[in-house]
Length: 131
Image (cartoon, rainbow, N blue to C red; front, side):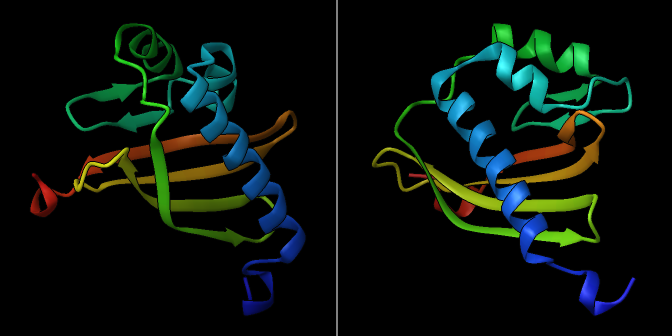
C-alpha cells in the first residue's frame, strides 16, 4: 500500500455515508438498520462500556436489551481514515446532551459485496471527564 491508497476521496465519502447512516439508525434506535451495519459473522466484535460482545447475533441481542442511545448524542472530532478501497477506521468522540462526560468510539469498516460493514467496534467513556 502506498500513501496514494490512503484516504481516496471517493472511498472516504462512501465510508462517511455508511457511518452517518449508522449514526442516524443509532439515534433513532432502528434495530434492523443497526443489525445490517454490522458484518453478519461470528468474528464480529463489539466492546462496549460494560460489555464484551462476540458475534453478530450476540451484538443484535444486546441491542434489544440495552437502553437506547439518547437522541441528544453529539459527535466531536470524527476522523475517517481509509486504506485502499475496501478498509477503513472511524474514530469519534461523543457527548450526550449537556453532559461534560466524553465517550469514545472506534470502528473498523470493511467493504463487502453488500456494502460497508462494521467488523469491530469499541466504545468507552473518558473517566477524566466524569461529572
